[in-house]
Length: 141
Image (cartoon, rainbow, N blue to C red; front, top):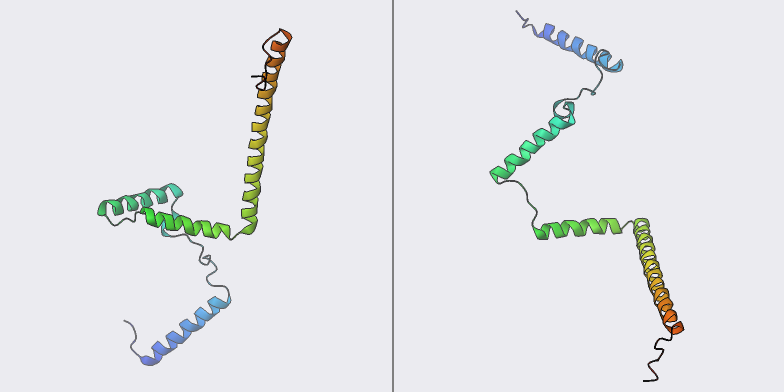
């Protein structure tokens, strides 16, 4: 039977407090690492976590309580993200440079293609001229 003497209870509480203080000064319980044990979701492997989360999402959709974006909400979310990205001036400058480089290389490729086409047509014209082809210009007509 437990003692009901108030003096004994007070002594027991004081002893317990002293023991707890000593443990705290020594770094807690030496046998147990402090706060490192994983529990619940954190203790599961990633595949199990995904499986459980997926079931929760499916249940919410079946119940009709799942959140679904409408087009206006998606537009606002995209706008908010764009504003956040555009605050980073260095990132925006890098994007601009990359776009400029791409545009320049496309322009160069188009110019090279155009020049190649012009060379081919001038080669055909010079062959006609040497064989006595029609060399009338638009001014003569």
